[in-house]
Length: 235
Length: 271
Image 1 (cartoon, rainbow over the protein chains, first blue to last red):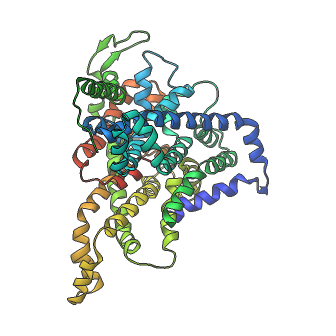
Image 2: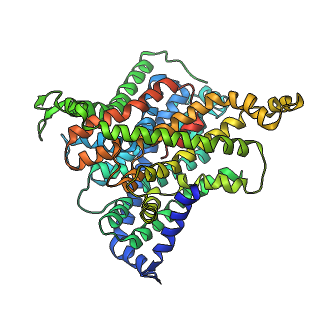
Image 3: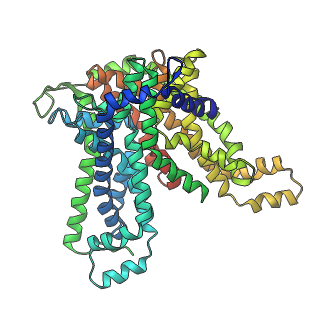
């Protein structure tokens, strides 16, 4: 089942990316380099900005929640987990459209919307990591006069560094591969997210070979997430 | 070590954080509500010029009942099939050590780890050859990929949490492997099974990318319907649909916050 609907198409797309009209060729990658190099850089930039924004919000809030539990805020942070991707894209588009109409489809708008959706996942993973930090360290630092900010920066974050790295990789890969959120935010002029390019290349131009080459670029960029999963599995 | 808020300053910090979090998280969701009631709202007015229930009435009169119905049918079939596979497979993965076990687990992680859209585009092409593109069967198959990932991983975790000693006790009393499974492990797994089923159901109901590619142009579920409305600048219609789409997730969040374990949610947040 899985082989037929996932592994086979995955393989087929990799093969298709190296062939055109029955010939083995790198021409599709040439097309990608010629037409989409800017979009690849743009996608990596948006995903990096989105991941950074997620962390900038999630780390202090989760540190604060770890040190001074406050149920209502923790509940709010988990809400985005349960909001479908398409709804997130649309909600943020209509949230901004009456006031800053062109923001939604800008790079900052896409990064913000992606960060909104990934806050839930970040909160879940970071709170888990922060809560497994031993109280004794925090207690000792607090006796020495450290406040919530210091405790988060100097104890929680360094001790949860591996978990932070994993969270960052997963969120970054997910943002790279995001499709429904940028699609719902609308197409502005200028560069596009990679998955939007794949969709239009395939759907409107009917150019499966180039779409697949774009896909392979995305697989490679998202390889970090795959490695995280494999490591988790083999441990 | 958790400090209770003692001073006025600490209370103010709490209230302030709550207010900011509420605005940032709930603001966009509430704006869906405002948009769904806005009969007229043109830039640069900060507020709709005319409110009314026209769009809700139009929706409830049947505009979106067909996609809702299609989505529910697909979700029920996907949930049933996913659990049918995942219960025995999850049990085997949790209990038995066999050759290829890691490989199977890995195969069930790949859809999670790789960008899905290019794979679904490729699947759509394959489906065309077998006449599956644009059919409910095709959409069910593509939903089963993600659905199985959730179901297999949650069911493996569920069965792993059930002590094998309970089954051994049943074996010692003469029960066969099948009987021990059916009368001891399976009943104990029911709460996890329900949680797993709900996650798969919700996933299928919300799935957009695969449905858009494989289902086009004949199979429309609510997310696809919403996208079509939004592309046509019918923001109100899309907002009404978005609100309806959030209902199952909201129920799950409110009802199951305690039942759902964090490890299930981690998988859920990533699709």
